[in-house]
Amino acid sequence: MKKFFSLLLALSLALALTACGGSTDTGDTAADDTAAEPVDLYVFAAASMQESLDQVIEAYKAVAPEVTVVATYDSSGTLKTQIQEGADCDVFISAAPKQMNQLDAEGGEENTEGLDLVDSATRLDLLENKVTLAVPEGNPKGIESFDQLAELLAAGDVFLAMGNSDVPVGQYTQKIFTYYGLDEASLASAGVLTYGSNVKEVTTQVSEGTVDCGVIYATDAFSAGLTVVDEATAEMCGQVIYPAAVMKNSANPDAAKAFLDFLSTDEAMACFEAVGFSPMA
Image 1 (cartoon, rainbow, N blue to C red):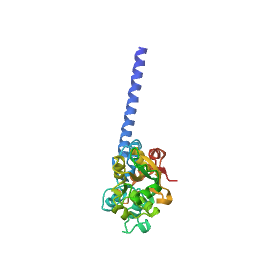
Image 2: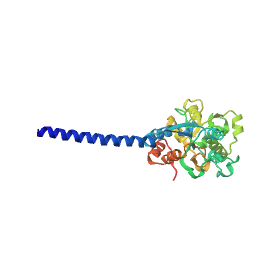
Image 3: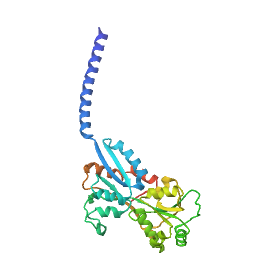
Image 4: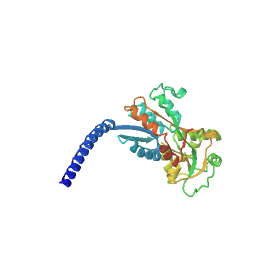
């Protein structure tokens, strides 16, 4: 009889705990359903960020599983135009301040069209990259530096890939030409230049060996496994700064700000630094 009552007591306790647990689970589920309403977040980022930002987005799933980050990668100029024309974009990360300034009412002289599409209060300088001179496997032309490249270009003895004039990496290359006193139009007429609509296209030309060298970012050279023979100084082309901001027309500004905050965390920075980016001080 004593054993019977012990079993009965144990059963009663088990039922009570189950009921309590069930009540708690129901409450938690309801709370989770409220907190985890699905969100699609549209992020436009410079093509040079693709490998590292994809890793960051994967890591963000553990932080905010309810958020699906939809990333679009292209040249900053192309992305700027798409945003201007009304594309859905919550967060924009450009490979140079110019394209962000063109969309930002506080962008100064570069905001020539009077656009006011950036939530300026969220804007930050996120990363720094480096402009490099990369060569195909084996470096057939034996190119060793930007100094040598300038001489070879002037002599018509090299075939260089660079970005278009509306692409930040192309604009940095133009500054390097100015630094060495080279005229881009004359070089183009001489047939020593070829262009890419974004840094990935320039990188591909170097990887495939269709050119003797290319001016690309350190991060793209790293991701493509290319040999870098020289790195441009700030005197040659300025700092390569990647600004980021939430757009004013974001459909999910709170989620966009949370994702932007995550980009500055140690976890995200580890992904960026692994391919050659540097955090801004």
